Length: 465
Image (cartoon, rainbow, N blue to C red; front, side):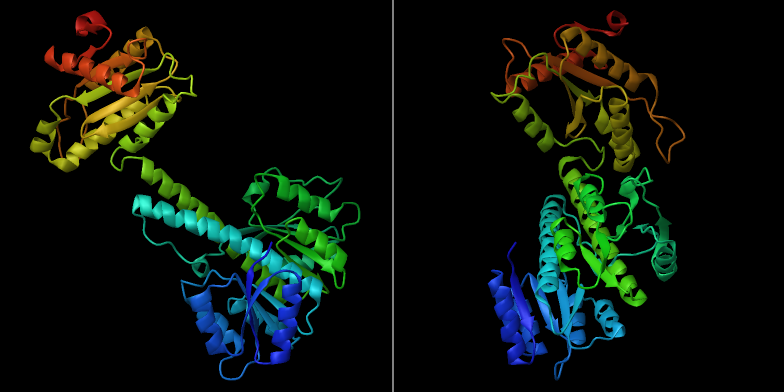
């Protein structure tokens, strides 16, 4: 996977060296020699990833990192801090400034490429979620979401897989007070002794397990739908580049080397949990926005646009499911009087309760939608005329037999509904004809006194009972 990489360093030799290494792996490389130039390039070019030197005159890398992460337009771009400093506190300081990773000079090729590719994969995922989320916001008029920096780490669940008790206890001690709850799971025979892996925010897996192949565990986690997007942080021996490459190819998102520095481990764990929860947040917002785009705000039923799309698909030439399809068209009787007498807020309460009674009396395969105003549609697949009329009559009675209780009124409101029924047949084999026949039935129901069901046959309350 290729990407545009911005290399920022005040030493030309370092810039050229990193540029050559990255270009040899077919990355597109941009360069900047100081912090201000870097910020300008980031703003204009929007690179996929930034390799940022810490020790620069004027504005150091920590400050550049903080400015990038505070700018919503570019805060999503991953940053790898690069420096000659080899103290653990410097790595932690970079990660806490918002950097996604940290490399120490002289930079070895394999860790460099592994880190870059891992973060590029993460950015591609995040970009896709952000684009889909922004598209959903356009459809649903949703507001701007929160940034990844605002994501809370409270109550995080981390599954640690380490069969050396002393090491496991030390790692638990590093994380317990800082991150959240830590579940320790001993692994035997390659099986994880937990039933709900989907609840975890992060897996920490030792690749030096005595009886189990840690890489196989990583592969199993990545291949499961429930854990496909959960980050994996592995613990490896320093200098074990072959294992590192295998781990990254399997989709491992981060690693720490032995001997483990507690502060660095905590910083990396926080970063991974934050990335995961931000991705979950974007997925949730995307689903919410898509749901808002196809549902009616008052009734929570599908809206007319979704109904039309659904019927277009049903009546497409390649779809045979239109056979035995029935439609109910419902119209609340004298609904204008409800709004005029009790107000539009009470009218909305009636619509909401009306919708609940509809959904409570149809099948899961049926589709209920608000067609407009006080009109509703129920589309019922695999339904003959007898069953369609039965359901329509049951809905009519459900509405009329129990008055509607609204806030601000001591007296419940009597509500009735008129229903027209149509069914796909030789002479009614298109969406338009199905609507037309249901509308004719509804008109007949209203003309014959309302609180009626009419369609293939038209009957009053006595006949229906």
